[in-house]
Image (cartoon, rainbow, N blue to C red; front, side, top):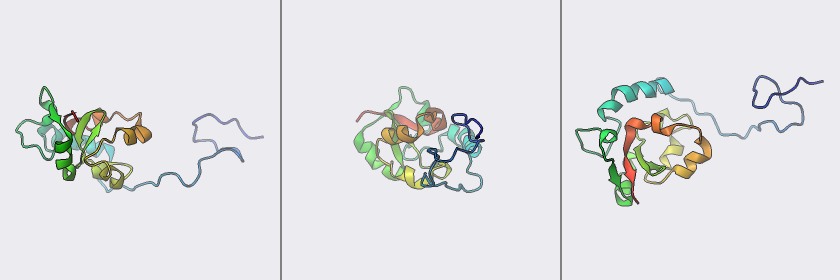
Amino acid sequence: MLPPRQPGCSTLAPPPGSDAPNKRGRAKVVLKPGHGPLDWQHLQQTKGMKGELVHGVNSQIPPFRIQPPLRVNKEILLANKENFWCVLNRKVYCIKDYLSFHPGGEVILKQCAGKDATALFNRYHRWVNYEKLLETCLIGIYVG
């Protein structure tokens, strides 16, 4: 008799014939050394707080500190596609420096440049606190 299986527990082997995870899941991406979550946090605390993680805005004040927030329309968003600006829940972020830190790889994020990536983000990362993760990359609010 097999031991009882706890939901969501990865320590016990799934019983034969169960709907065990298949081998066709998303491929793992190996990040370069120095590109882990703690490295990203350190980068935010050093360069990010000075506004150096935002590209395409010429301002002495980091955009995430400007109140009221900058307003970004569709034309401005598309004009900064090469800076990898994207929209998440009506907020515009510059994800250019985060690309190499993304656990799913750069290719996925590059598809979001100049677009509203809310649906794609919510499909795979509903539980992720992107506002904290990208707080120093905030450009402003989307008014498109």
